[in-house]
Length: 182
Image 1 (cartoon, rainbow, N blue to C red):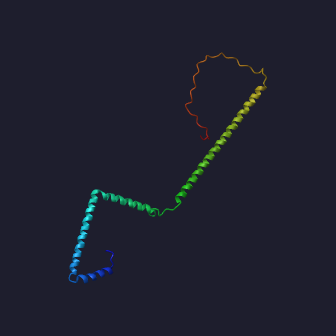
Image 2: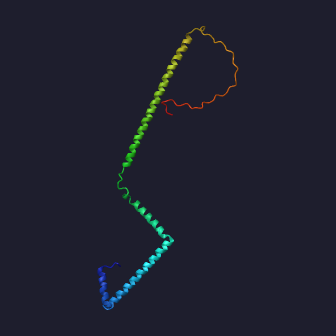
Image 3: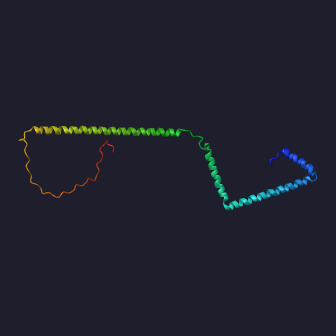
């Protein structure tokens, strides 16, 4: 009650019995009970009046929001309640393995495309050399023929020239050759 133990209460009762006397003691307890009852009633009325004033002013809503914030802070300060089944490193390990696989796939695809491009360029160079060989052989055979054998072409009458018109640009863009990456 007031921080008194049973020993202190017993000592106070014995002193009260000696000082007040046995005849006046029940009257004294009755008056003390009435005083405590009135004090409790006044405290209840005061508390009720304060709660009504707080409800009218909206303090109760503010207190509810403050209490909800306090609950949120408690849940943040104790994260073990939500993360009990968490295994550290498991998600990071999965993501790193997945990224490594995707990186390897991209690297292999780029290497394959580069090899195809190199092979195509080599094929084009080989085809270009083969075309140059017959043209060079033809020039050499023409040079061996005597000059009399070559006949000049007959002159054709000049056609009437029309004003030059600019060439129209191709409306379609040429498609890239197969095997080349743009």
